[in-house]
Length: 96
Image (tube, rainbow, N blue to C red):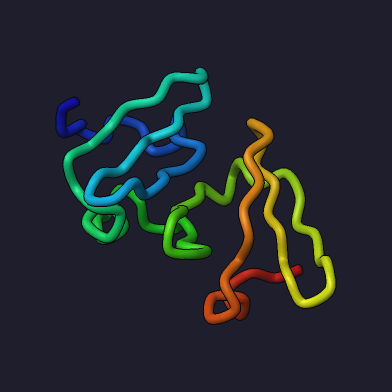
């Protein structure tokens, strides 16, 4: 585990919170763990434009493959097959 220097944000599909760590998921299938919280990474200028859709995920909008409404729930499907829900509070930032 180490603290990564973000080289190319476009290589990142999403960041996922894991307690006080963050897991970076890259388009090449690799994962790396950072010793900082998701909130810490969300505030970095390199990740401007990434979408915080719930407590656990910070998504690169370039890799969103589908948005789906299921009742009152909005689901987001990422290009790597990952699926997550949009929290009620953050729904306004996602256009379905």
